[in-house]
Length: 367
Image (cartoon, rainbow, N blue to C red; front, side, top):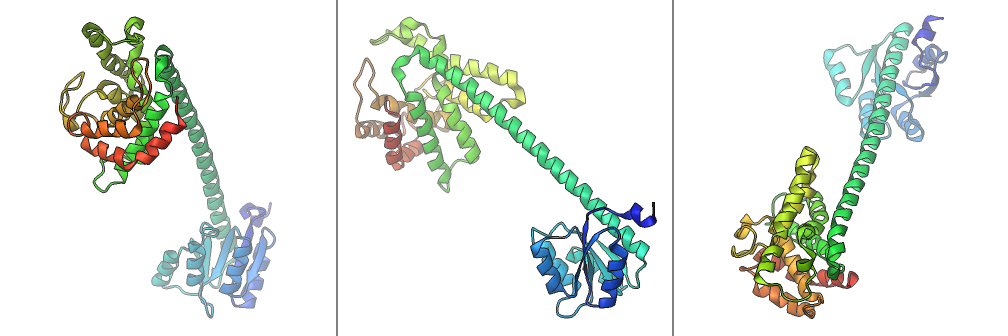
């Protein structure tokens, strides 16, 4: 094995840029036994070659007319297609500030004229190996990112499927609610998006948080799985004792979701946290007369305040065995009348601002 064979990275393409034909000829003779070599007599020609097909490495003269090597390097590093191509400067300049300028322009190394062929081959080999290692690391990281993303999607699908089963269990026992769950989920998303777009909107109401909040909305009545059929499915008005039992669904739902949160620990995520808040507190009222905890105003979690408006509005416009539906205008008037007592005034304002979208959701998911 020859010394040049030990230094070569096969199949690599080297672009040599120099305005002196003798230097180009000599460098070509040194590099051609081991590499594919391209030649350019000035910076403009070099950039043209790189635009067609970026080489694996560039040996670049510094002192050239019209465009010096530093400027060529800066342009290469500004282009995403050539940003990662290593540039080795070839120069007769020996001052420290000249090398500093080269590194600031994005150069990887310097070869000083007159050059030693062995030095040229060693520097080229080293930087090609570094680039190969970097390319491998980037591919490996991309592969890992893809695997992590696939795993994240799998976990999210599993979570959403589990949520669907949990919600379906509650729906199965209370068939009169129809598409109530889908409608309220979209109402909550719409109201939250409107609030988030306001300059004075709630802190932390990001797109991700809103998505998790909307996914949590169907859990609002999950606690009804603990309510006896004789009460849950009773067609007429509940007695005082039956109503006390019915109201416990808020606490049952929160307890159920808290057990899930405890089991999952740090992996529980926002969705279950929002779900617990909604399940326990969506029957609280702004003035503190709601249940189960009698919370007042902003002490009620935002998720639950959003759900309170969405839930009541949808119940009002929906037909039930014990009542006829209200019109949208009647339901909106009812919600407006409860602003500041039953409902958060800010969320009532959101409902009024989004009434066209809310009507659209109600129509799309009509029972």
